[in-house]
Length: 220
Image 1: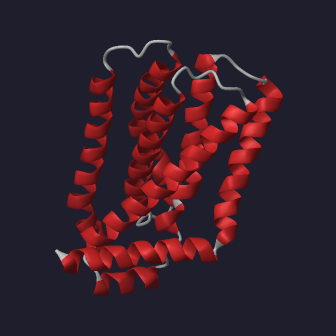
Image 2: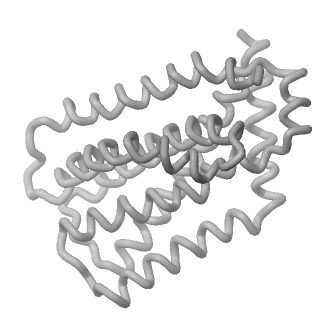
């Protein structure tokens, strides 16, 4: 067990250290969050509940594309060959999934903070929405990490991610918006555990697909 955890921890530490050294990428994402929120504020002021909810999740989607998609695309072929010789593919993909989940949890919190400061706070249950936001950010990061792993083997990775991601992201976004609507109601409605369970089941499916399929991509 320790032999599997140590390489996972090392790869995770490597990604975190690279993020600190390449601070322009992290601050570029923060600038994107701030500018997007400010532009929405200038154009719409403080929208109503449903518009606020939809804008938040669409913004989080594009943040995820910018933050997570580059995790595989920035890895050169030589570096990938080096990782191929020293680590198991499952350990490698799991390190990416964990790192991107942590990153998107942070981005979800920052996005929620800026939205509430600039666009008002229509939430009846802010802590519930924060938890849903973190869970949604993790779900989006898992999907785009898996898609980025597939697209990194193609000649046109951006186009491949768009083609593969559209049928997966649309139902996931609709589910996240439906779950998040509960945080705007005065009384928490029934059905929240079932919807959250459905979202977690979708995440487990993505993790299982990564576990099964990534070793075949790794050999290519």
